[in-house]
Image (cartoon, rainbow, N blue to C red; front, side):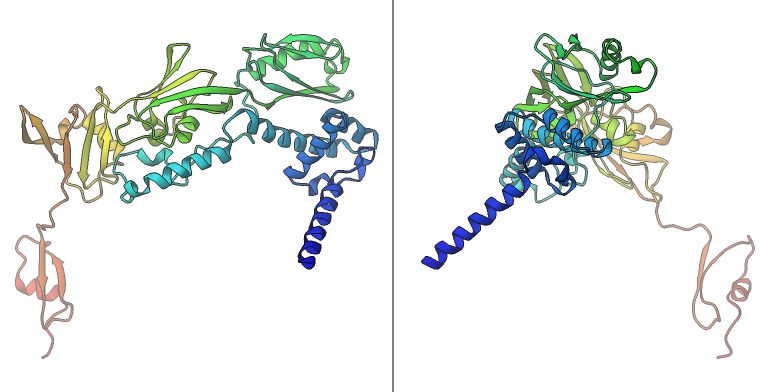
Length: 428
């Protein structure tokens, strides 16, 4: 027992020593190799500084006064931002860890129903069972079209002939307050427009901006949290907290993906009780068009309704399955969604099974109709393969030097001609 207690005490001492080794005296930051510290250790350093009344700006000033180079200061600033972003997102939004746990729980409960992959086109896009993932990613540059709003925390770097650093959170009134500058209203502006407005105010303090000897960079270090409701045909409907960097695709992914009854052609986004966007996932899957995947705002409502017009196409197409069609789309569009006809497809016509007057009916759709023929709910299209039938094939076997298949190349081809093609008869 004494030996066990001694070992435990030794481990505790080692742990304390490890923590202290990264909790350096703030008067000697120049000796800390920040590139060797992980995010947890940077976070520990920031927490210790906060406990002693310092913030990250104080640490940067101390490091600068101790002779740290500008390049190292920028690296240190990025490490501080990264650690603070992780901490802020953990407090205010659904973290990737929480999202993963939520999705994992749902997957474990539903695994028995997913032994066979669905043949619904696009169904598995948000399921996380492919290499395509729409998990949140905060480690990206702030998009220039990002709209600033209350709760965003802005990082403003001034470098060149003059150097300074500001960090300010947008107030509920839409203002940020900078030392010696006063309030600047930025709410509702894109990042690019906000930078222009800030430059106008900063020029009064930093004359080097006009002479292009002083430069300004603005970024959203910690995006605001937005609350979004997701309802309808998703596996985990509910209310979620996201960072404002997230989009409709991110939200559906976190909500466990769609059900088999969901539409992929008409996902609706409501904002302030008005329909502001209709998402068609097929545009993304078939054309790479993600323009409808817009960023989320506070109190947005995402409504995933049931499908309205689903058809089946099988046979000699590259991607057979079930597809959702819009009213103005044709059989040609359906074939395109299915990847096109296979090389061995019979292209003159396609067999259709359609419900007409409470009965199934077989219809032959000729190739001339593909561009105009409109698929209806419940249709089943079968693309036949070319029949293995030859018009000019002849086979010779037996005691010839080159037995096999030959073409009848002449209208009056005789057996002698065929034997000659086979290099003649053997002597036996």
